[in-house]
Image (cartoon, rainbow, N blue to C red; front, side):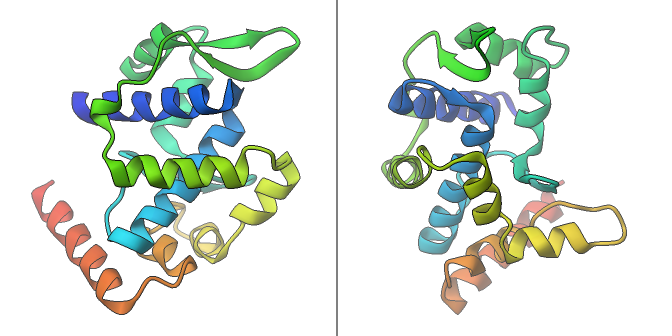
Length: 183
């Protein structure tokens, strides 16, 4: 993850925390997932600079998930950067994140903010169980069924959930091929 991608991800988290007044990290993960889905289906481009993995309770952005697990004792750079701008709410709400500062919106485009807002509005009040069932969609199931242990959820599969048209799906596939060849 580049420094810019790391900063963008942090600004997305801060934006979610700001708009919700603080929320548990499970909700943050799902809000990001559904915002990613919306943006992929509508524009053909990803907004979350992280790969989503199919875990037992639904999709999670993998690097962000690792960083949040380390917030109290950061070992990776993203965890250190996240710990500087967020905090846990306390013993009564140990999974709830609060922002220490406002999000820098220069890192987010209008379409990304639009997708985040829609996802926040639709998902912030859902229960853990409701979010789990909602996120256990076909993209999650496809990645979860793989026998080779690769539980990364394909952006194409994510876009298909909202019935992205064929041109958008082809564009996403082309972008994935380009990204892959640049690695």
